[in-house]
Structures are given as structure tokens and as C-alpha cells.
Length: 558
RNA sequence: UGGGGUGUGGUGUAAUUGGCAACACAGCAGAUUCUGGUUCUGUUAUUCGGGGUUCAAGUCCUCGCACCCCAACCA
Image (cartoon, rainbow, N blue to C red; front, side, top):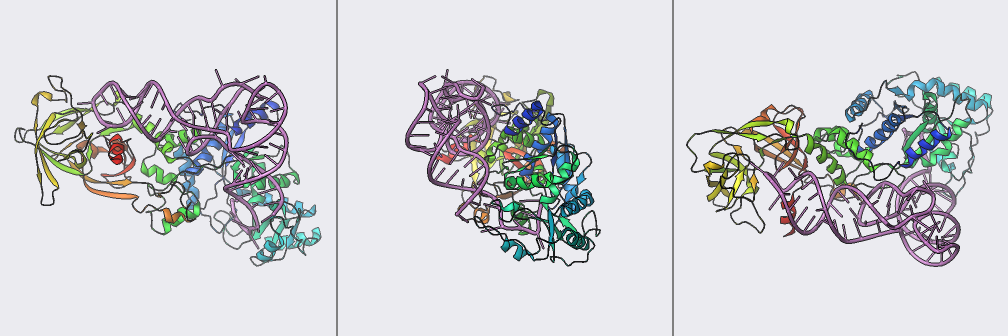
């Protein structure tokens, strides 16, 4: 699926090694996985890792990966998210097939719950949440048993059916597994299996008044689907004994699924918790879930990140059980790697400075051929109009050049990309000392960019003909959070918010070919970076990622 | 406080399962270049700590330490 040759340094990660062993030992005879998002938010880069693992693993071993919505909580879930999640999975490059829903298993789950009640392994508790929580005990402190723990199966069944029929108020009762209130693992101190909710469910409407909890629904859904490998993140490690307990006490046919945990993906300068991301949106810090600064799949897509780059990144970083935080620079490296190969080059002047060629024939327009992508000869060339009145980048001219500055300065000759060699003769400044116009002469023999006598210049600069320029804007993005680990110092990520994460540039000048950019196209603005054309607004470009910039490093040092 | 998990350069991931600690990103230096991009070359830097077993330990034993997770009717 991933098209780069980007496998990790060594061989299999621990999950693949496990699967390979199970297959060769005959512990399993197939590989079925599942990706189980809850439809209460948008997918982000962390999910991309899980998707790549779940779908990638299944594909590698000739199996299948189910997209299953873990829709057991009607309070927060919505079909809006279902559609967005399916769309995002497809965009990432995986075919989810017919989506499945935990809510489709509610009836089966209910029957299994009655089975556990009949076995004396589950009971209805009439206490409220606070009481149950208090009775659970603490770390190192055993819990105490509920006074309702020893109800008879008949009584429990009657009560449970009443719960199902909507005869009980929300919060008045729960169904609990009857395991061990003294267990050292808190998860096994009689966990709640069902709670009463009168909220309508996005798929089952108001047919249910009781809803299964994650622990009760997840493993059983896996079993129903024939999942062999249920991969989840590390925080569920403590739930695994409970996952297994339910499965062991049910009349299952076939092999039970197995849960394996791995470390979630964290990135520097990034938050991925649903709550934090929602906060950014609701506080208006970003424009929405698809703001290009967001680590959501929709945000990254709008930013111009190729799906293949995200896939390559995810498979390259591999999977382990070590809590870790990857540097966002690595992700950006994969983005550049793909875009360098694929993106067409265009010339754009983001902060325009006027350049006049004093010896250019009045009104004359030349048309020069410019390579579309030096990495891909098949991309061909394009014709770009050139005249005596041009826009260049403000950064490309200095009245007083600092050391190692190779660009235009009075008396120096540089190349205007694919056009002519020009020499700066003079410059105008305004009352504040800002340069307003730069004057040059040109070498008519250097058409195409090469001097007839073979002399070299230190710098090649991009340009746009003023008479032909298109005007538009660009959004320059920086990290949303300044700190590697947002909130590391104070505990609140918002303290590390980068208030200058977006710079809006208007009055940018684009070469004519940019007028043909389709919504969503990603191009390289030569010497500046990769930019994604906005899906809705023409001639608005979002900076995907800048080019590596040696001059920026040199000038920052001094 | 009890239980579980994890510790390898700045970051992340490997190490033929006891045999010369490697790969990538980042950094630094240089070469090439009509993008100060790309590409290429070189280079800096690593096994959490103490003790033990062994010819040999990142790997095995032991005692510590640090960090993460667990006491929702969230997932």
C-alpha cells in the first residue's frame, strides 16, 4: 500500500512477530482485525497510526479489517461523525467495506447478559454512581461488596428486563459483572455492564433504554465478527483480564479474540486528545476541525499533506509498547519526500518588491520555458511571460548585504530563474528607508538563464511579470504549540499556545499558470515551500510545509 | 498506597534472540546544483543505575531508580 521504500531498520515489530508466531504455531489460522472508532469526533493523526496498523496488518496476512463503530454511548455520538470517519479512512487510502456497528449487536449482547445473570455472574445494583465508586475502594484498598450483590438470578432477571423496558429512571440501577471486589486490578471489581439512558441513539433510535459499556461491548463485538487480533492502545492494558473474563464465561463457538496493546502516537508541538482538539475549535483558536493547523486528518488534508506521506510515516515509525513522542520534523520529512517527487513547481512572490529592468525594450514581452518538475522530466515545461517590470521577493534584495548573502544587492549579478542574468544598478527607498523599487540591467545574451561566456552567479531567484501577475493570498502556518510537549511546564497546553501560528499574506503575486490550479492542488512555490490550493477559494494557498532553508539557518545564527 | 506497563544517541526505531550497538530524522562539515530545494559524501552522539552469572550481557539473574496507565453508569 505504501509506495516508498520505507520499512523500519529491522524486521517485524512486536505485533507482526506475534502474529507470525501464532500463525506458524497454529494458534490462529487467519488474521481479522478491526478499527473501532467511536463516532463522537473526527479522526486525527493518532488514528492514522491505528488505521495503518489494523488495515495494514490484515492486508499483509491476507485477512480483513472491519471498520466498526463503537457506538455504545448515545449521549455523544452522531451520524455526522460516522460519515466523516468513513470519508477520512478512504482518503487515507484504505477501503473500509461495509461499516459495522456495535449497536447492531445490542440484542445479542443483551442475551449474553441474561446468560451471565443466570450463571450468577452478573447482578442488578440499585445504588447510584457515587456510592458504587466509593465502594470500589482504592489502590491498595480493597473494595466492599454491594448490598445488592447476592440477589437471586430470578430477581436480577426481572429487574434487568424492567431496565430494558424503560421502567427505571436514568441512574437508578446498573447491571454489574459479579467478579471480585477485592481484586488488585480495579477493572475486575464488579465493573458496570449496562447503564440506563433515555437518550435516542443515532442508529437504534429509542428502542433501547439500556446501553452496554465499552468493556462489555468490545470483546463481544470482536467475537461476533470473528476478529482474531484486537489491537488497542496501552491504557487498555489493565482491561485485558476483563476482556478475557467476559469471553471465558460466554457460550462462544470458535476461538476467542485476543487483545494486544501498543503505544499511541504522540507528536511534538501537537495535542491529540479529543477534548483538547474540541477546545481549540470551540474557543475559536482555530477555524474548525479542518483548519490546516489541526492534526485532524481533515486538517492535514486541507494543509496539503499527501495521504501516502502519512501512511509512510506511520509504517516507518513502527509499533512498540514504549510511550513516546515523535518529532513532527519526521512527519514533515515524509511530506517533503512525496511532494518533492510529485508537486509541480510554480513561481509565486509572497512579499512583493518591484524590480525594473532599465534596459528592457519598452512594452516588450518575452516568453520563457520553465521546467515543471526537475524530479520528473515527464512533467514537461511551461511558458512563462517575462517583461521589464517584475515582482521579486523582498527577502531577495538587500541594500546592505549581511555576510554570506548571495542574493541581489547593488552591483551584483544574479539569475532570474530560466530567464536572464540581471545586475543591480540602483534602488529607491521611501522616507522610512524601505526599499520600494530595485533597478537592474540585463544581459540579452543570457536568455534562458545562462551567460554566453559561461560566467557563474551565486544566486537564482524566482520572479513574476508584473503585467501578467495574478493577485491572491497565502496562509503561512507555524506549529500550534511552541513547546515540544504542550503543557509540560505548567500542566496546561494552552500556556504553550503559539499565538502566531498563522500569518495571512495578501497581495501575493502569482505566475499565470497558477490560475489553472484546481481546488486542493499542491504545488511547490520555488524556493519557498509547498502550498495547497484552498478547496473553496481560488488563489488562496495554504503553506503545507516550507522547503529546508539553509539561508534561514545561517542568518538566524548571526 | 496496591496492580500493570516501559526504559537503547537530541528524537524515534532496530540488533541474526548471549557474539563488533545499527537505520532514519535532527545537528555539524563538505561536494554537486539554473530552487541556499533535491541528490551525494563525511561527521558528532546511545544501552536508566548498582551488584552478579559468563570467554563474552542492551539481551540472563538480582536489588534499586525514573516515567506512564488503572479507583466514569467515557472509550
